[in-house]
Image (cartoon, rainbow, N blue to C red; front, side):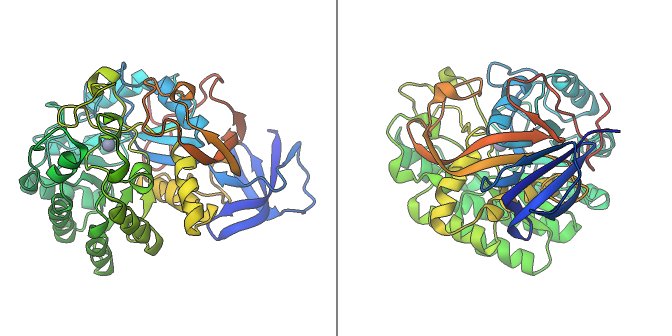
Length: 445
Ligand SMILES: [Zn+2]
């Protein structure tokens, strides 16, 4: 007989809203939910009182970069940072590891690199690149949750962009399998070289129309093939209406945005601070407000980190050049507090945050036992103090490279305790994270 655990909270973030509840846990799963005051027979009871309990976050957009670019990040450091930030499942991107995850052999290499190092659960995206469409079916069978592709230069030669015809070909194949194609949507025809070293010149070089044209390409491929498509890191708020219209027309299209687009605005990026550089870029405040409206009305479905670290040297820090610095923002450990800091001021609840940062990413990645506090799901939880505030210090982050645009910012909301599969865990604990296949089963190592 395995031990039973009851966790009570007067503020449990459920799909139906924030409620007083008790979660009964057995064998790593939520067996059932009961009233907060229900008399329950359990080996152990934890009463959180007014401390909110959220489902463990699922971050479906993390660049772990191992094997191959382990000076940027790695499974041990990334998963520790995730856990410290309330994220109990990550889905690793097929780049910028070496090899990139575009073949079954490469997936095996990556799984071997991850095995035994992870303190949270980990699943894997495959990559769709020119020439590997015949391999996508085998990659799905091997356990990837879907595929990532670029419509523009990815920044690394081993992960080239798909052309429009190849995109359709790949999506036709995925339509039958029910797996999503997730797309970096910027159209290279609308992107130019920055005219100077300033942040404004960088933003101007990657305008919202580049996102719009690429989204049009993706949605016409989704409409033609019936495949599910997903726009990663949407930065252009003025594309929300296009996405809403596609959804209304029945096209299988969803979109995510990232904490940095919802927190920062271009107006506040200081000269030379390339820790703010990512593609597409953080745009102006008026655009940020459009992104918030899109989250509120459901045009944007989820919020995930796009944790994409690199070394200070590649950022050109301390005095970076926005033309040449590597793009990517690290925020795996901070996303929940970043989003809560600004969401609460806009009247959103912890149930909204759980939907954006746990429920939606779990459904995108085809992990049916994740993403919600509900009977039958994995007992992954985060106890989160919504009123505690703290000042971000990069040196206190578990990220391998302690570079963050949030340095010195005061954030509201702190992770207090975390549970993975019903076991309370901390970042310093021995790795007990599992490697997951699409559908939520264990990936064969
Ligand atoms: Zn990314």
